[in-house]
Image (cartoon, rainbow, N blue to C red):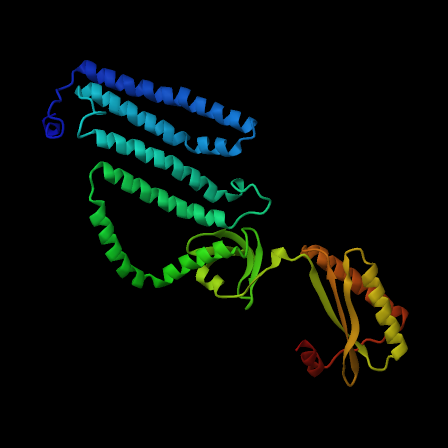
Length: 356
């Protein structure tokens, strides 16, 4: 007890009865917050969900632990007040500590809410499409909440914030030169969030085809992408903002393009009839776009003609597109068999030339 007198000079040695009362208060307080406060919060959360107030329910649910921990902290301070016979709530030395605990748990509740929505941003977005801004700025909000809590608590202890901020400013300039690449990634993430070129869940590809996959998450420094082989790759944000990005999920139509090689010995009449029949089959298919269908001989080689077959399928589903393309290819084979169109195997030089 003598070691505490430099902090609380008026405290007196507790009796066994004071110790028993302090322990009893802690036990009763713990039971109360477990059996009463926790149950009341759960009932209110259920009531809000029944009234279709999901946002309020989630906020209260995330504040659950912060409220109960703040209550237990108050119970412990109360038990120590009785044990030491000194009002710790109003004492000039300890009241700042009590206020710091209350402020900490208040900010902790807000932090838990932001953390929940960072993991599940779709629940905060009332629109049909997810908003890529949410996970990014929710993470920024978490950092700002921690900084606000730190400065608020520091103000209770008369901490010299002006000198501290000045020191941070001078140090920040020096650090900025050492973390240029990291800052580039952070500002790249801000550019991605503001430009909104893609959402979480979108399938994207870069022009150089080095990145091709589905967006899993977007954070301050990098974007998490699941590749076609189900691997996960963390791509620096600065890499993405400096390259053209194709958002394949926003396509409304899929192009199907096929090159067919027929022998040059085929008669022109047969070839024209075959081309017309192929175009008709594509037009009559229920999944194809009718506005743009190309079926023409576009190149001529010494031993063969190259036929270009190009059409669009009104879907973004790869399986539907491939199924439609398969139907058209079977129909083309049947047309060639009926008209006795002779196919040709292009030479290597002709094939390479046709791919250019």
